[in-house]
Image (cartoon, rainbow, N blue to C red; front, side, top):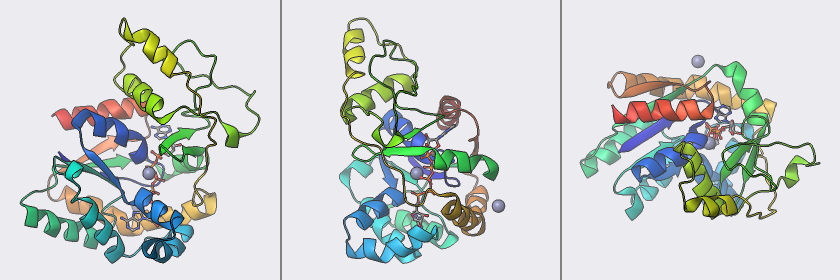
Length: 265
Ligand code: AP5
Ligand code: ZN
Ligand code: ZN
């Protein structure tokens, strides 16, 4: 499958991507993640992108089209991909169509994470990220699990953790396994129970970080960019008949089942 996830900041694109990726064996191409990596590594691309990103404005079409063109050539993307945060302008959408046409392929579905702006500030300011895995948490909606917990399926939040920047996090691999078990709504079956349980207790002690653009002020300009430059992209795909609207204000698991419904129909 070739999918596009479109929606405002905090609508849940990054949260739903791992589930979709695992269910359909797709590669996950998030232009925001790729740009942040380039900024951190101070590559020529990162140096060009940084100013716009810090202000919550869009990076130039040529830059992002270039990274996507390159990234889509990876062998792991040949079976299909999830584009998360691209295209964000009608020009990007047209360029993407041209690229795919050359390969004799096309986009199958565009998932529109529809949500009211008023919900997004709380989501964005409460977001904490585990840098090495990219996994995302939320102080209120998706708190990290803490050791001492028996039940793999439940969340626990404790005031005993004094400072959110030292949230205890789990080894990447363990976390990925665990997230998959949860996403599928499965209980750890029989003999694997012990393994699942022990996985949930691996602690890395690595700190979680917040994104520099996750402030109320920068969110405001990111939302402006979304309404002005990205909403027309939704209409672009609507007129092609491949748009599916998701109720993105629902809890994460309900959004996941809506996604599964859309993709299996
Ligand atoms: P990018 O990284 O793409 O940021 P964004 O679009 O603003 O989206 P976010 O990552 O903030 O939101 P998300 O939908 O992934 O939310 P998440 O799932 O994490 O872009 C950053 C910048 O890069 C841009 O501003 C621009 O400068 C540049 N850029 C990138 N692509 C570009 C392009 N194509 N062209 C030009 N410039 C580009 O969820 C957020 C929080 O909410 C988390 O804490 C999560 O746990 C929680 N949460 C998620 N779902 C739920 C739910 N259902 N209920 C409750 N809480 C939830
Ligand atoms: Zn994201
Ligand atoms: Zn609007």
